[in-house]
Image (tube, rainbow, N blue to C red; front, side):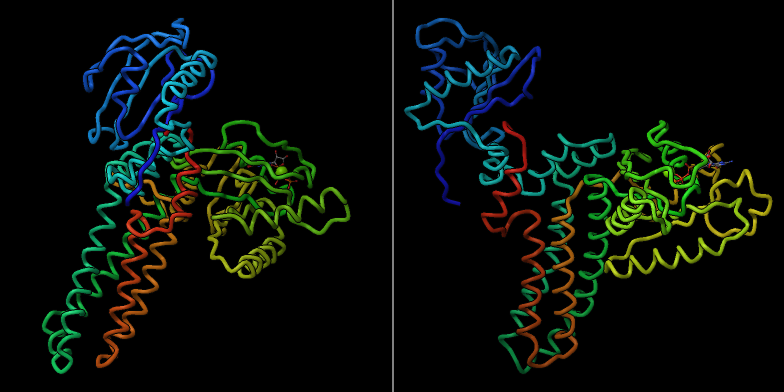
Length: 456
Ligand SMILES: Nc1nc2c(ncn2[C@@H]2O[C@H](COP(=O)(O)OP(=O)(O)OP(=O)(O)O)[C@@H](O)[C@H]2O)c(=O)[nH]1
Ligand SMILES: [Mg+2]
């Protein structure tokens, strides 16, 4: 990518007061800048004590300078880091001074994510790895941190590249066959093209599953507690959160607004939403609450339908179950539902109930419920090899899958369809390439890096 860039500078540490603050510079050739700033050369990768002075030679800050000459740096360009004192004003003065000295080089302040973008454009990391840097910084649980590091180290990218290689192999075979039309069928059969195609199909399915798992780690899953009034939804969110986040009273219709709380189950970040009990009501406020409950249900990744085991008449809860299902069908999503019977401490015939039996009051069955939540979200226990991923990646894999399936139609059609087969395979490969950024439109790149923090 022939891109010539002016040097960039940014404060890399978070704003606020801290013991140390870091200003980072990246550019094609920083040797002159370094001499102008510090009055001397810096040895590569060696910590040196330096002073930063303003134009009147008054000291602004003193600290450690580190110089990483191109190409052995994060961005692949020359990189200079100054580790000074972590105050907002002092760091800003250092930044301004570097900008002033670097004016001749057209130095400017970096855009968010621009250091990572340069690392990507200079082939130091691929796009999935660059995204993992942002995901590592934003990770909300320990499992997410470790998974982000796995993606950062390239595990996710290698999994994708393995599939890409399989597709390439098959494409080469097909292209070769196209040149010998009269022998194409024998040729493909001998090379076990069908088997190769099936292997790609399986590999993609596997990749999708793991990517979905990785995206749960990044985005967290949205789990909604829904049910009739007074069944114990708020009691349950309090139990799951380990905190009294929602008001609990014996009065039906207590909860009106949605209450959101982030919890983690085995390191998986999950947002639990408590909602207003679902019923027809004339109360204006409650009515709005019920509407919001239905909205939450339709937006969720998983619904926990809470029912009261102490209530003799179970018919209304069954009707509600059908209604929830109907709403899900209308929303064109497949949202799993967990049926939960609460208040089993008050029920003497709970063995006849199907579903998970809990007592939000006593804490019975909560562990079982947590396990069911993870299972329904598609979370498997093999956390060791989970890599963090994004919705964008899932979409790309699904598109790749779609084109692979399309190609399959042509493969079985044999004669004359081979060119179409080849074309669909090419599209399969192209969508996989989007994940690592081998083929991606510039505007999308801008969007991805624009969501990073400054100095990264
Ligand atoms: N014995 C018993 N009582 C429970 C249990 N869970 C909830 N309760 C009681 O049931 C009543 C209603 O509980 P809530 O948690 O407010 O129920 P809710 O589903 O949030 O109700 P709304 O907000 O009105 O829709 C309260 O008096 C709770 O103490 C349970 O497991 N056992
Ligand atoms: Mg409630």
